[in-house]
Length: 270
Ligand code: 2YH
Image 1 (tube, rainbow, N blue to C red):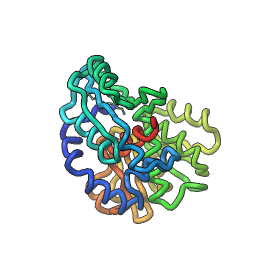
Image 2: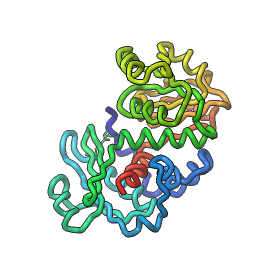
Image 3: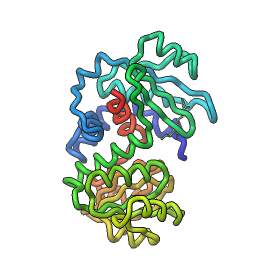
């Protein structure tokens, strides 16, 4: 699993407005609208103002990532929550979150990033939320997914959750591509005939225009693999497209390190 690094997230607090404008240009939806769409809700931003979200730094494993809690807090504030970072990390932070009357708590270690509602027990996992957010973004950017075909690159947990979310959107077929053939076969067994195993990436990229790029690999999608019809929703870190591929598809790329997943988590636990 990819662990975020400070360079990828440090600018999030100062660039949320630009991020949101760019997302609107590509998908037609703001971050808040997309998160609502992903969780099939219709919250208003003012509904969130009365909700206190506590981000609790976690020192377990490889420890704190400088700027991580600040980035999560900035995203939550941007979509309307009252957000704070606890002074203490770990369980001391959870203790503080309860004492401050927080409605929602968020904590991430090296493998798992969770949000949970301290009152109603709802919880959200970042991998599932990220998959839902990117499938929603692909849906909006491509004018709907019903009866369309989508290629999912990478069957880590975000990729697998993307297959599940796409299946619920009524797509006609899902291509899956992973270096591990057993993972592809497991997905085929679970989801049946709508799954196409793609063992040759170049062939898959030629065949499919709509792509979820959920791999930890860089530069696996080259300029020759994309055209004006290509739409890529890319939760993968780092981005799997070459710089020339990014320039070529212009308005057909959705990619961020944290924003969509965190916004979906926030609304999912309300
Ligand atoms: O970046 C990560 C993991 N890859 C979680 C991925 C879930 N999709 N975790 C962040 C760790 C943050 C750190 N413990 C802190 O600063 O609190």
